[in-house]
Length: 195
Figure 1 (cartoon, helix red, strand yellow):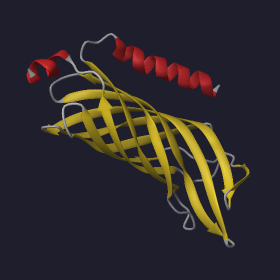
Figure 2 (figure 1 turned 180 degrees about the vertical axis):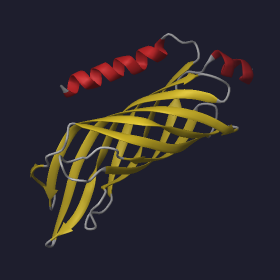
Figure 3 (figure 1 turned 135 degrees about the vertical axis):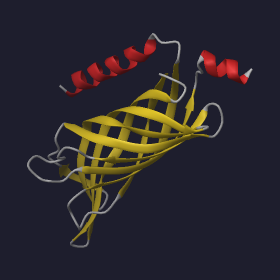
Figure 4 (figure 1 turned 180 degrees about the horizontal axis):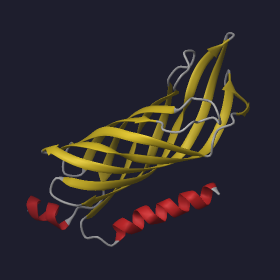
């Protein structure tokens, strides 16, 4: 079921970009600081994110950006002298509206689908079973994007969860991320402007 969901959304996302001349494709990688809400004894956990990006220019000021990423999330906890980590990883598919508000600088907002691919509980460095995590996760995404040059970009994002991570427990994902990426292609309009 998870594979079908990933396959469907990936095909939908990238096929919608594939036939446009105003589309850019790229790669990105970065770091996450992730936690679960509504628990005072959980701490933010460090993780990585990486994957592919496609950006479709709708107008001079607005583009639609789709991504397929691996995102390492979860939480940390000190419990009875033990160091506990919840390693809750996802394939995530953000679909982002990108609003350019100044040259090379834009605001980003949109929904995000996550499909769980890892749910390990680690105690003092050793995996000690699984966490009963829902397979599908929905989040909102708010962020900024800045182009360091014509191809290289930097992103900062905040993604608050909209759905419960664990069934019938009011805890949701919360993720702060910073990423660096590069677009491997440029639109004709961008090339004309450069030359």
